[in-house]
Length: 337
Image (tube, rainbow, N blue to C red; front, side):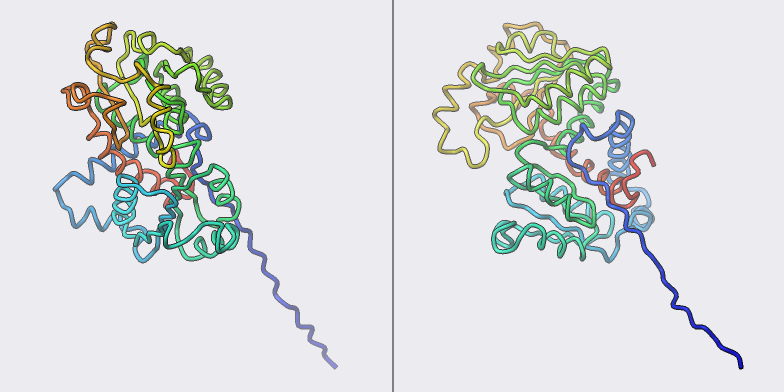
């Protein structure tokens, strides 16, 4: 008598956690530089009118996929650039605003993230708290792209460094002067500049504390790169010999009731021609602002001057989003590919 033993075939699947974009510090110098190269390359393709049909065919790698835009905070540039980038690769952007979904209110972040990530290729998250970003990353099965939180703004830093490189060609040994608040934009921008060989001088009022973790990372990076990183309280000190002048809003979303106190805190911090005439700037200086702009931060005589690159900077948000989708979604987090 012959006995046949039937064995169950057991297969095991290993799930690889996706790589997320949380901040610029998490990237190596080469990875960040390659993101800028990628953004520049995709920009040249996007703006080229040669063989558009073939270009579209070559880049429709997410055709039929969904890209989620999870926005707790409103935005103009982030929404347009992200939807445009998703469409470029053939994906359908799905916008989830604060009135469409209340993150962690009617449903836990855990449940929300698991549901959204099960149906999408990535999630661009523009949220209030850095903790929200951390929680999304913990539970998501697809890449989370930090599109702004209260601590970081990596997409803006990518767009800014693309703009700087376009204007100067070589970034090494330039000097960036930040005049304004200690916020999410400068937290990532300072690290991004140092990774690209740019000295950083930050001027903030004495009453404002710079993020200690970012400061520690920046100082370490500056030492490794043989660059200068400093925090001062006098705008004129920061502006001396600067090639790049940057500011941002003093009154962030949700701080509108603090406007008068903020204006007092930032007295004499407005960037205008009177201030700039009192310092020695590099002959080829440029002015940058991530927008939206308020007149208290920068006067018209600088904002609309020939030195201003604010609108080129805004456009470059599109190519920054494209580069991130290609690197983190299409190339599965291989930023050197």
